[in-house]
Length: 249
Ligand code: ADP
Ligand code: MG
View 1 (cartoon, rainbow, N blue to C red):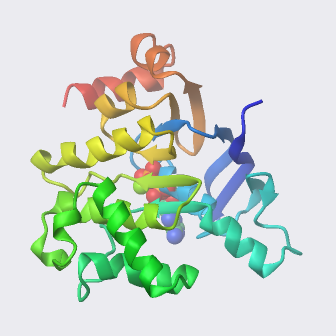
View 2 (tube, rainbow, N blue to C red; view 1 turned 90 degrees about the vertical axis):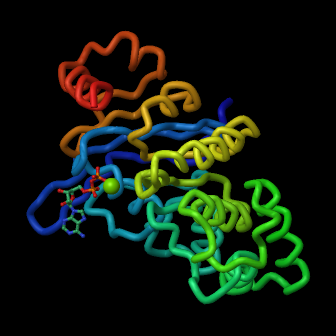
């Protein structure tokens, strides 16, 4: 049996009278790297925000490892533990500018998990090694390139040892020459079995690294299939349209 990390069940989200997500259903299993793609404004970020409990749901539910975060009676401590199972990486890094790279990670561990200083420092060094930035630990964020900043943000996400990492367009704020170094880190994480849900416009990555594609348009998931089926044999007109636009840019 596949171990389910996230189950999204009949998820609905409205902002005011606008229906933004309409009956969304999908499951992410342990070890999968799933690319969530679709036109701008289709609701991709809103899905990630719902999973990370940054939005209240209008309808449906989201289970994290079988537990319903929205359960009214849920114990605060259990809710916090469940939320720690997901880590989110944003487009704009969100690093503390006045702290070194290492302290960014140490501080996060201290705040979120109350990790002892020495242990937090050990973890920080280990995760910086993982993203290839051990030599930048004493630098400040403004001394790094955009690609390096995003790798620090990924390291910080890893430091909290989540069961799934959610990425919201992690490379779209980067200059083209820096995109690869970030995607390479993500590819290595996927290879090592990290479970990931990735909103991306990088079709090469979605095709070659991910094991599944979820395609959204106008608040609905209209395809959930392998990259091979998606790219080689798209049957839906909206998908053909999208691929024509992004691949011929
Ligand atoms: P994507 O990430 O696919 O570009 P989003 O999830 O950001 O799309 O947005 C989907 C739709 O929801 C858009 O029409 C957007 O304007 C709307 N939306 C997102 N956040 C809010 C908000 N806080 N209030 C009102 N509308 C929002
Ligand atoms: Mg978005």
